[in-house]
Image (cartoon, rainbow, N blue to C red; front, side, top):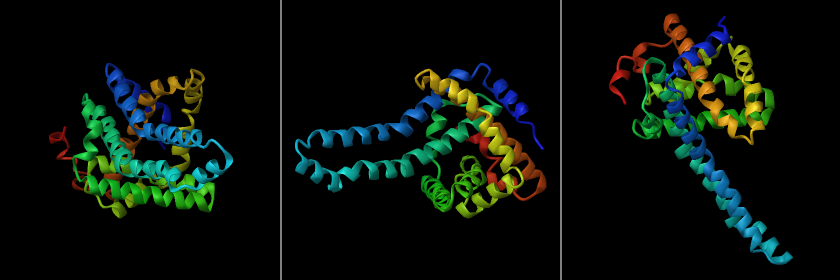
Length: 242
């Protein structure tokens, strides 16, 4: 069993002298991941403000235009946020070994973009369907597939079924510990939320680096147990990528 305090300590060491670059990466990710939600809210308020009487308000409520913002959000998450998620995972994994470049955040658009988009879409769909069944199975699947973006950051061409299989085996017997590991950041996020939510932005580099440390630990175990081969994760080729 691993010690979450050691992972957090390792993350602090990694961020020493690199914090502000990591902060910029997480800030860019947060802004790019959330801006369309803000746009969608504004889009809805715009149409509601144009409904000057009850009949017009009823018309706009049922107009297909009202759902346009929601569909844009869905497509934006699939085609923009998912590659950014892979790029962010790649940034923090590489930052463990040497200072990573900020543009690594956008690397998910460069290597096998279609595979990354498809794998994360299907993975997210599985999690959503399990959540519809019941909240606890949804949480279990969320933890079980939490390593998929990191696996794709190592090998963008990794098939979805294989990525989910590796993630399942990496988290087998570790789900409770991983969930508690996530919960251990709750106090920090609540403290950040007290500062009008802005404080959360300063916690994200620490959380992301700690999550990366967890992945590297579980990846090392997976390689040691032999249920994943180094060439599957392109580990010998990683040094040649930006």
